Length: 547
Image (tube, rainbow, N blue to C red):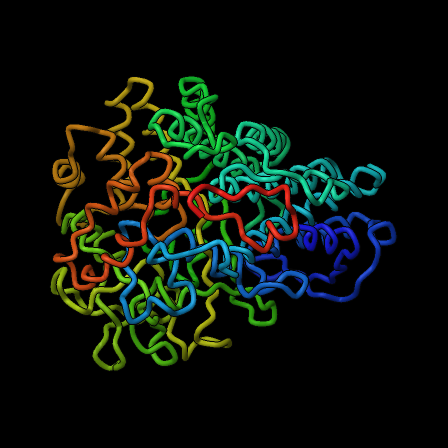
């Protein structure tokens, strides 16, 4: 933590910017003290881009390696659940410990993820402090307030992710804060996060000034996410494991769910976001127009190679096969038999998310052309015990059409989208007594994914559970698998132990490997360990129980 504070205070990276179709990306140019930098409105815009850049940076101040949402944070959050299994021959490769729940407090990926998120917070704090001293007349219209609001939303999001991963955390709202701050109880943490997001909700426009920037509805969606998270963390009895700062006993469950209902109603009615027509288009490299219809927050990749803004999914979350030739992946994560069993054959999401592989011969594969871009199609999956079974969630274009390395992608990871908000609203409706209304929303989410030869009623009947709560947990996995929320969902619903215990080593092509996670799993692992490197720097940081 001292390292983080020192870097953020002593140097602010000054950047020249260029606009691309996907994002405004900074290029390092020189270093200067903040007091000599914040002279024009464009200087403030450049600093704001620096806050965004931490989401998908390759490194931050020379530290880390794709440690944010470029790769590692997605892997940390999407692995190690009931959705994916780590084949034994890949368990010792980079990031394998997250798939087998074998992570420890010394893991450098955890330390780097912590550092990246706090670096983003530090950049936001530096911008906010200097923005306050800039004359209002430098800015057109309400732009000064909007820059403040964007920075606060990003700061709130990064504090939120830290807390959902680690529980109680230090909260930094100033570059002059003591580097040795202790972990604050989660009640104080979320009070600050909600304050930041409410400021964004009240002051941002319906859409930002550039593609992929946060807006009023990003803030609203994150508030819905937080209020449902708080309510569920209290009502489903997750233990604090003897560490009181991680206790959610203070949460007013009814008030939290009602807040989620109020804000989600506003978002659904007035935001202009819709469920994009084709679920598939949410997860391809080049379908950003479709993504923008539904996605409120993403970790942005760019199709412009000069920007060096990429994401990396090649190891885990695309169909297995020859990467340089077909745009396939390594297959380090494979779907569980349990995920396979969640789907009905009339659900398009089934063949999209749990697919066959791509193999090595492009001549035997079908090709889908989307807006002039070629995508090789995975082979059909014969059944759950076929070794072809692959994670099909994300799809990469034909490498022959790329102007950058085959391992890199222009994919934008969806971090918050309307499909999730509808399911969160369904949760809030159910737990405030409106099961019928909640079921309508599940049907709405399913409707876009029903195959043309079937009907949504078929899916509703196939997926019906007498206990709506169980049906909701299943539906969140069907819709959101291999995004960043399953780990957090299992924790907040206190379902982690149950789901890991239920993994069947005898069903599913790769389920023989679930014994690795079953052996390593302990209830306390719903929280990641505080990195030992940070504890060495800051003696006021307590470790989470069990590490």
